Length: 201
Image (cartoon, rainbow, N blue to C red; front, side):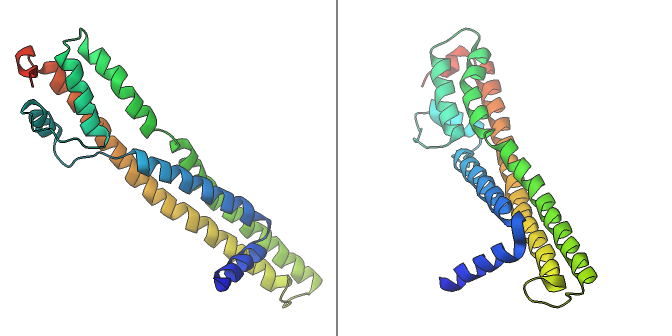
């Protein structure tokens, strides 16, 4: 535990003034990713058509997740024979779309800013290095060339370490969201084209 704290303190000291904003960015980004991960859950591996057929055949199993909930709510509307079903389904499913879209901008912003902050640290470290060359304080441990290059490399490394995993996970969540949105549209299409006689459960 102490070794981890020592390593963390070393990174904070060696990275300079850029490290606190980078850590704040990392916390914000992973908060947003964690929220989206908990919300964007399909809930079933079955196809939309299969779920609707199981609902009609009274083989419905209560499941948590966006698609099973949407099928259940959509079928309840269909059974009530509401007019302008598509409009009601659009209103009903818009909550899912809004929830899935939360924190997208936050994650993208953090992924974009983290490497730029790392680059800022790199530039700052290189300036310190060149200043040391002018002063001829070339190989001191606390500053000079060693300190400037250390700051340059650490901030760049940390910025990329935040951005790359965040980018990969964000892309994966976007693909999951796209699939769920396509499934929600399919539910609307199937329910709106379903004859009234088929709605009985």
